[in-house]
Image (tube, rainbow, N blue to C red; front, side, top):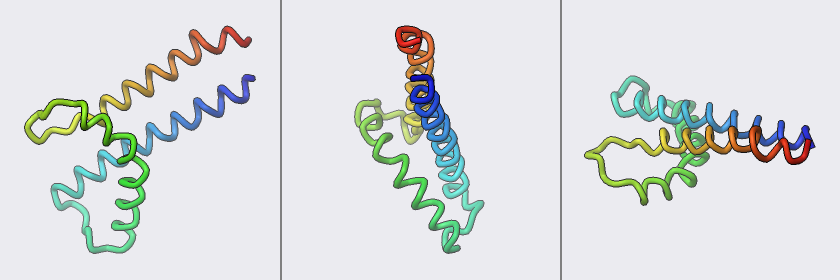
Length: 96
């Protein structure tokens, strides 16, 4: 059972880093720091968008408009942190 919890924890941890990379990439793209016409940059951007957007879209629908500031990645990071904490402190001890 420990292996299952560690695998879920690892997946959530990896998704956290992908989410952070996506946010940083979007900032770099918005401020024209990176060249969006570069094939590699475009491929990385599309990958990050396709991996994070399905999870961020429902959060954006619920969140109020903050005048162009998107805090949905922060909300999702808090949700992931809550799930990881809940998993290790409340659910895992039931199976240990």
